[in-house]
Length: 205
DNA sequence: GAGTGTCT
DNA sequence: TATG
Image (cartoon, rainbow, N blue to C red; front, side, top):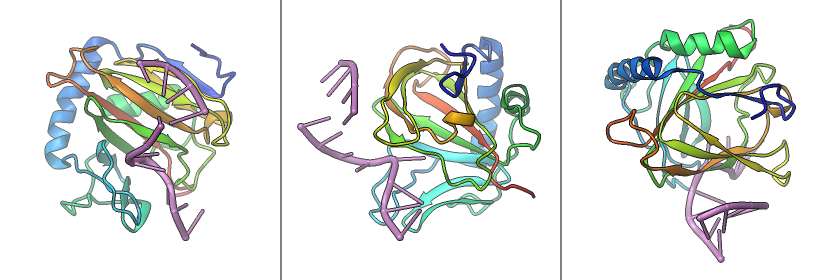
């Protein structure tokens, strides 16, 4: 809707065409053998997230009873995260407009019925860097607001192949996923949605 | 130093 | 169901 980022965010509809999406899903299949999805839990309460997560890149975002943090290894296998696929790195280069490379790529799997409450991405030290995300599979009803939880929000549909950049004004915008619309994509044989989120974590390195 | 939770 |  707003490619110029007047709201601070930039949506690039159809950034990945169907064959690029298929190739990426193929790469993800191998990556997922190395770093399987797991179910994170909320700090303190231990309540499980409905999304399943894994990561690639030098650092991965994790949540457990101790809190949120970035770490270099998978919490269940103890192994380092696999490298970020080339196409995904290319999205950062083409859309991010940032000199330093991404360090973390969070991979979320949303089965139908999964939601993600409104939140800010603020566990990164480098808040000047944008957040770039790619959608694959079923459509998501995405909600985005402002820097305060009480700011008005609006809803947008994220389709398979779309890229979304949260930078500048929108870097700290509250956002979440209200709903996944089952049956809106044939990309993933078992349905659901995969979201890849690229972030720069540290300022130097 | 809690929080991407669940609630209506 | 959509919204906050």
